[in-house]
Amino acid sequence: MDSFLKRKAETGASTSKKLKLENCPHGVKCYRKNPHHFREFQHPHLLELLQMEKIKIPDDYPQDKSVYLEQLEVLGPLVKDKPLAKPSTSQATQSECAKPGTMLEKLQKAAPYNLFFTTIPKSPDTSKQANSVTFPDLLCPSLGQLKCSLQINFMIDIGWLMEQYKARNLEKKPLTILYGSDEFPQMEQYMDKFLPQVTYHFVKMKDPFGCHHSKIGVYVYEDNSLRVVVSSANLYYEDWNHYNQGLWVSPRCRPLADPSEKSGESPTGFKAAFLSYLKHYNLPILKTWIDCVKNADFSDIKVFLVTSVPGKHYPETAGSHVHHVGHLLSKHCSLPAKTGPDSEGPLSWGIMAQASSIGSLGKAPADWLRSTLLRSLAGHKQTQLVSNSSATLSVIFPSVDNVMNGYFGPESGGCLPYSKQTNEKQKWLQTYLHQWKADKLSRTRAMPHIKTYCRVSPCLSKLAWFLVTSANISKSAWGGNLQKDRATYIRSYEAGVMFLPKFFDEEYFEIAATLSNKNKKLFPFLYDLPLTEYKSSDYPWCN
Image (tube, rainbow, N blue to C red; front, side, top):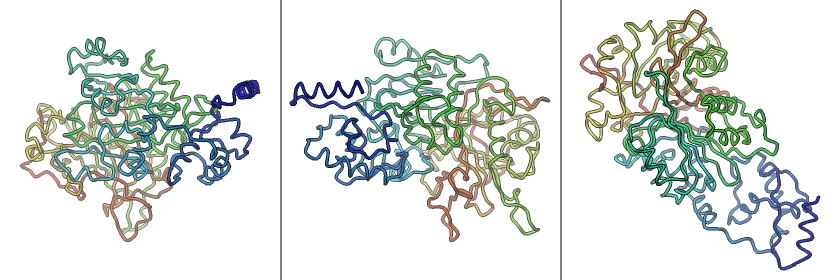
């Protein structure tokens, strides 16, 4: 009330003075339609809509679109006699970016899955694909007016990264980076001398076989809303131009009117999982970011955040891919029951693991690949997790021929750090291996740095689930052999997102157009099916 009286006094003192209203504390969640309320509080999102030639309510707004349309009918007459404020340069750019071809439009078209692949300049067809993006797309003002950002990654070329921000005139905005590779010497000295807006921390691993491998971006906007991007791409030129990468972009997470750690949670527990992951670092420079996440509404997010963090982990706790994925599939994955000799049972659905590197897996499939990894990936509601499942497992990894036929010849294999010495010790893996082939999307000649895991129907048109992650096929990333107490040991930091159909109100994801399609959209799928097995003469690309 005091603030209202103060505004009245200021208005009375000078009628020519521009009235400055406080923003409504409920933001886009405001449901009121009383003219008095609109005279007392500013609603920037409604004013922005009134400035549009053709009003379109954003899909990520939390209320029914009819609420906003009714509010606009009330607000319109109140502002029609007052000139709307001339948009600032950034606002003008934002309005421009909302036009066709902008990232906001791409995001709306990609909904509800929000899954994107990188544009490959050598393959012009990829630039025409609706869910193909470049790094500057993530900074498009159509997504919001950027206030600050956080980049959690393995390898960062700070020079290249700042060029991407500069392309959007955002190079002066505060940036926090956590990184795990010292590939670029003198980077810290460069940041200290020339980049006062960048706060950084090098994540030093205690375990020599572990690495800080997660790839997460957090983008906070001027209205304190935010987006989270979970990706497979490092932050340097080749990763965003030469290789196939995958990234999930969250809906806009609006600021909560009454923020707390437990409010604004998604049906998938994404907020709690992300807070747990950030807190694990125990770093002062992340405190502000943890607060940003606490204050945001994640309720529109439909994917699960799956992470690995160094240490010992049990089935009931977060922090390992092997336990978390197994738990999610056991609880939420539905497969057709085997009802007769000719019916489609769970074992007819094949599991596919596609990665850019393979670790030391042991002398036989039962040592880890089937006893630990497949135990997790074969989980579903109708069965308990079992070692050495009878489920079919196919591994997609580029062969020597795949790489040599790539756009850059042998240099195409720069993103595939599989050791020849390791491969020689696990020749049995050859029977699981399949070629990299993505002709349908014109992506065969760009090698995959993306990592994906999924379960596919025998007709090759449906998915029971899908995981895109930074985690390669290794014990360091997923977790070592299960101990007697079912604990597993993690050496690396990893992050990915799990898509489960029931959280999208679907029975299965559909990846091919058929006469029996039920879903509104096809799920984006990167490589060609059916798979192409390795011939006896084929050899996996090794360094």
